[in-house]
Length: 288
Ligand code: C2E
Ligand code: MG
Ligand code: MG
Ligand code: MG
Image 1 (cartoon, rainbow, N blue to C red):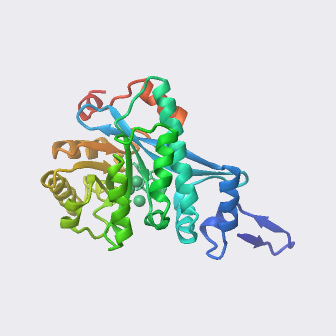
Image 2 (cartoon, rainbow, N blue to C red):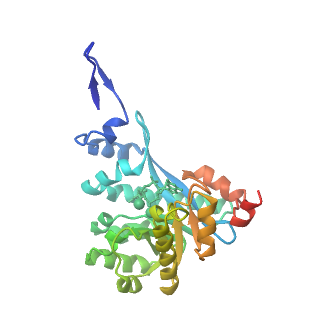
Image 3 (cartoon, helix red, strand yellow):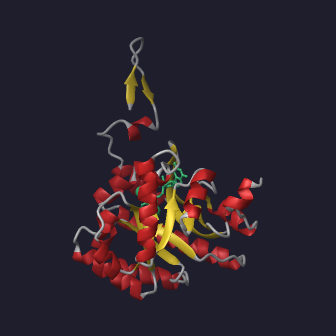
């Protein structure tokens, strides 16, 4: 946002604040440029098996390396991308980048069980979605049993038939699905059983409260139990402390993701974490 000083009338340009504070600042043209100039980066946050403490996968999270503004986080531009439809080309860039990175992992002799990517409801409005994804899978020889798409409750349960059809079609290619930010929206449990959703991700807002908020403890316990009865994998996001990890471990949560293990990092750093056999269990952390 441009600010005028009282003493003299030159304009101070504060790079970040125009994104954050000025609701009228239109970033659409800059987003179009970003796609053209390839300014995006895909970071990876490890997903850890709670029992073994080993990295078994990752979530790819987009970043925008803006030439003037620096690193921009997705909350600052994904909503605009969804509203304008630019999420469609951006989404393909993400899948293509993930494919390239997976090839590089394989070439280094490293494997992961899952690589998840966020898919927004808007991407299903592109009638070429399945065909394009299929083409990318072939181009990068992506193992579809490793690929997982994360969807939110609002995308899944908004009664849009084409979303469900898209999921079924992608599932036929062998792709897995998970429910992101679980617990923050509305879920239809009967539909959840019918759709090919393999795992549920407990939203960070509940995980952050398990050690001081009795309601959050009960919610997290209930979500874990629910996942067990629906026969789904259960993943906690936003795990930041050992106490949270202990709580989750004691109720049988399968996987965790969060700053306790690692922040989202550039591909090269994620590869290092994998290569070094990074391992953290509630037990060995307590003994450190
Ligand atoms: P999400 O899919 O729920 O991703 C988890 C977010 O929580 C990430 O934020 C991650 O950095 C953050 N996080 C993980 N562990 C911790 C923790 O221990 N503490 C805290 N405070 N935060 C943690 P990020 O990367 O800023 O992404 C925000 C959201 O933007 C994502 O939420 C997702 O909805 C969206 N997004 C990110 N990448 C993509 C993409 O490629 N495509 C689409 N459509 N959406 C994306
Ligand atoms: Mg996600
Ligand atoms: Mg989430
Ligand atoms: Mg989210």
